Length: 385
Image (tube, rainbow, N blue to C red; front, side, top):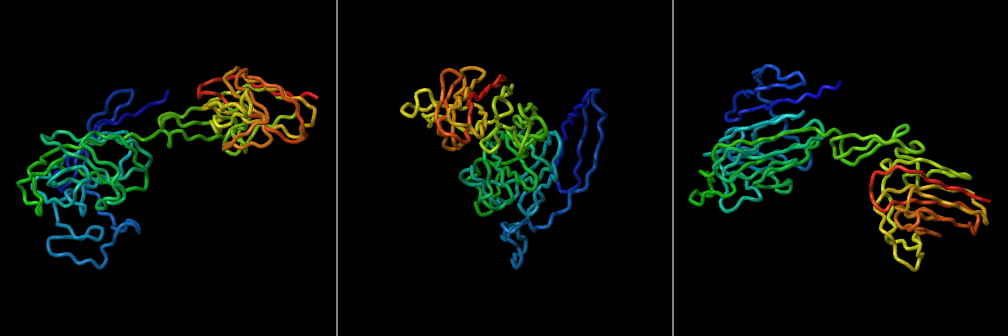
């Protein structure tokens, strides 16, 4: 039996610059462990060498009461209320909920979020990283005023680093190697406050909830093929496995592309699970691949396709192709071009075709499904003298 561990809520108070205390509990299929009080030393300040894109403070001279942040002097604040010294949550990992408290009232206004209006208010700034691709849900709780949250990636001060700004809860993805900054301020500042000082009574105590859940796999839709089957990342939450009809080659099932077709010599009959294959071509702009021929109109084929290679055919031979049912477009080509498929003969009505080879050479047969659905069936190709 596989045990799934579900960490309980971790509540962290960041009201002061002192030690951080958290209550941690873990849940297994045997129930909750006893709560344990954990004392964590403040995370050491990280060197400001954040990469060439972030302006340097080297050679910048700031007046008393200010400090340099990414090449710009800003007023010194209590910990957590400016880019110079944000609340540093460190490396977030695992499936957890972090509830963070802050009280920006009386702090200076040092930056403006992109979705706040009029006079801006003081702000609280939280920074963190992740150790693996992680789903993040962030929302603001416990305030009597309308507050906004803005996410900046890679830089706290630059507007070009903004990913979103909203009064609503947000669902987003965090990746390793990035520095994330969540900025919380009032949607609308106090018009009676000196805008130079920027102190506002419209942002009071609040809580920021950050829920983290690592992806089971990433990115969603990614696939790999090793041995006899495909592993598909479904929605980032599940790895699904499907068998290849003829095994793997070059990281994909044989038959999954023009570059990696299934070779047919004489005849072939195989059972194929379409979940193993991708949609690499669309016959919508290829009327030559339909029963009507080049003078007709193409057929939309949004489903998976299988590619077969028939080398060394001789003029006068007959190629017979049969799909599991009539939900496929079948086409014979002398060149396999997924971007602009052109057929010598095609069928989009019967699920089968018969074609006489006019000129000796190498040819391709493509079976392309109309829609993307789970389906398993038998494909048959036979070359008759």
